[in-house]
Length: 72
Image 1 (cartoon, rainbow, N blue to C red):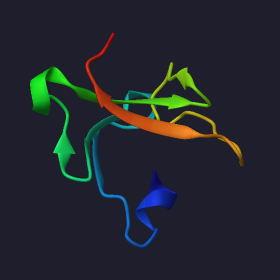
Image 2 (image 1 turned 90 degrees about the vertical axis):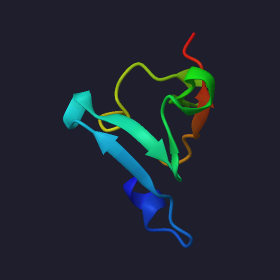
Image 3 (image 1 turned 60 degrees about the horizontal axis):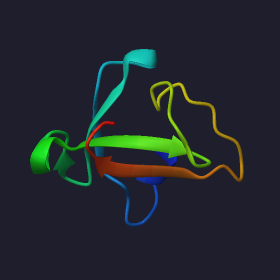
Image 4 (image 1 turned 60 degrees about the vertical axis):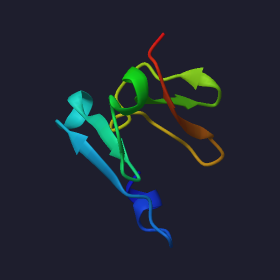
């Protein structure tokens, strides 16, 4: 997320908490809970995240996808 925020145009995001308790609360101006109870969730290489994005290891070539949806 830090690297994406430095791109041009940069990705804007807001968080709450820190470390393994970090929660993404807004992405490019769209906040969690807006739009019928949808939230920002992410997956890595097609698999749903199991930990906070702040502590999720990623490597070159990994695909990280953020989706705005209802939790399953």
